Image 1 (cartoon, rainbow, N blue to C red):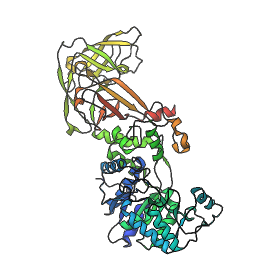
Image 2: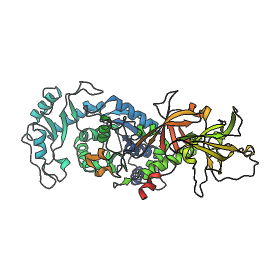
Image 3: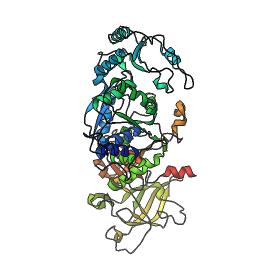
Image 4: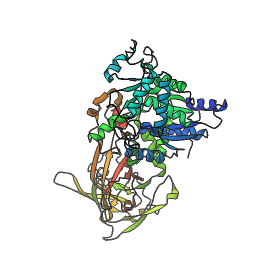
Length: 556
């Protein structure tokens, strides 16, 4: 696999390089990717995956996959499985597959240790009372009336919490730090809450669960993580991260923050993506309009294109909005090198070659990919009656129209030059069929006609054509920055984000198409076979158009 970095080091690479040069980590660096299994991963997580695994790859280190499964109310095994599949598909292999739930007993003992040091206490206050005690960023908080409970009482109450003697919300365990601290996260934060909910891995073994801030740093420490890399919103959590490690006197892992990925014209909140799935605004987590890795994969994006995208956007310390057209550029660049070129007619009109022999079938050899001659050629049948694109013909063509019209000549891709002689119209004025003659000496690769035409159009033999369904996808949102919309984002879902075309005809070679395998429909875009396909009903998803038509539309 190619190395995932630019020629110049980003700030995290500089930190790692300096740490290794100083001899801080003689056993090498250790990173982790810590997803919460409460939804499917999206392109923002791909950036974090590439960063954590890429750092370890570059500097000869290791990376753990650790699930942050401390909230049984939102977590499911389905999400665990999908995350593992996505990380593997992106091309990475983890050192260990771990779970925060592996450490529940040890984290519980850490909490006991802090209680014994008078650094944690059981609080009977309600959630509303605790929120009021916190104060505001400009006014200090007030101490809980339960803050000065004795060590013995706190130990007894915490044990009773674990034993299930109290209902949800009756008590919490809080760290005893400083209710006047300028950082709100340091004002006696919650460490444990009661949840009488079965856990997807531990079942009913526990009814108290550690909060993220208490579980995360301790899990990092127990695994010997040297560089704990988080997104920028955890910057204000770092003092608490360090406080727990310091007071527990455990391995001093260190947290570093980078800017999360914000992508234009889509939603980058797992909560909002879940809402879209639950409200059936999309067909599921892997709907090809979704920014999820599974959605991108189903749409036809390759792992290489996503890794390249993450490499191109770099690693920054400040949030910014990345235009989705860069992601589309990366997939075009990749598929241009690898995708076979095939013929598909999206809006068919009948073309009859009047001087071609009735019943004759000619097997033409057409190249699969001009970018890669090693892909060879395939057989495409050619006959008297063909489908061509309706917009490749004009009854009254303007000057410099290099396709088909009365008296005009054009080359049929991989076949012959034809001349349009006449056409027939339907009662509504639309073109019913076109009649043309071909020049036998003009066969592609064997042309001795001496005729030069500027236009080439694609076609499909009518007797051999396979009818297919094509799904055209566009931007999920009609606005650029979903972050400005709050919870009103559903009003801005692009009504044209999905267009289904059922009367498409494709060449017979596509009977061999494989799900998620990319092809280029010549002159139309990159497509892949969808999982909804069956042998008698092919469904193709458009991955991306050949050109950035959205940018052109925006400029109008």
